[in-house]
Image (tube, rainbow, N blue to C red; front, side, top):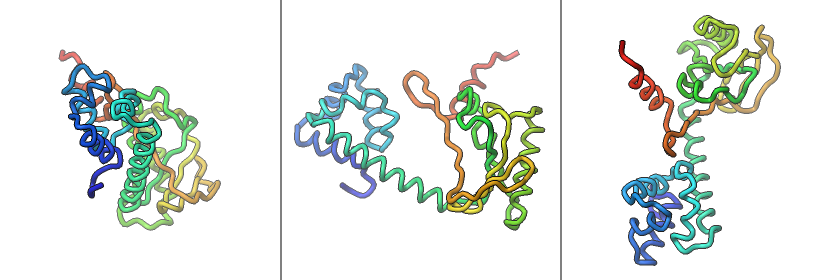
Length: 220
């Protein structure tokens, strides 16, 4: 496997050579009638986006004439490498910040959190160069600012705030209640998840969804 090649792409490329078949034949065997679309999905899988391929991925073992466990192992290896790379990037880019803790850990409706952006709702960035001793107060002030911004005692999709977590480092955080009283020490930073939605069987980002909504609004 060459540098930058995923385990699943290495498996697919090697197997197509062994079987003497083309990538177009592979996507055809996976059930794609639109070969161009199938090739785009195959490219996504080879790039490591195995979760965006949907149910089509389930047909890969038959297409490659492999036992399902062989393909599953390659997918697992791909996910593990991606997880390690994502963790490395998170640690390298880490800056102290706060996260608002609300009644709902899973937003409802999810589409609203996706459109607005989870970080825009929950994340509080601290003033650059400020001292750690001020982080808890900045987090509390940030919570008040968010509530004033939305004009409510609740935050969109997440309901009422229960407190804030100050992420001092990627492996150290402290949770505070809404009054600023420390509740517990955490051994890792609290993270927000990136919400994605599906349109026509394809995952779309929050930015794409906001663009679709803005362009579909009637012009008066």
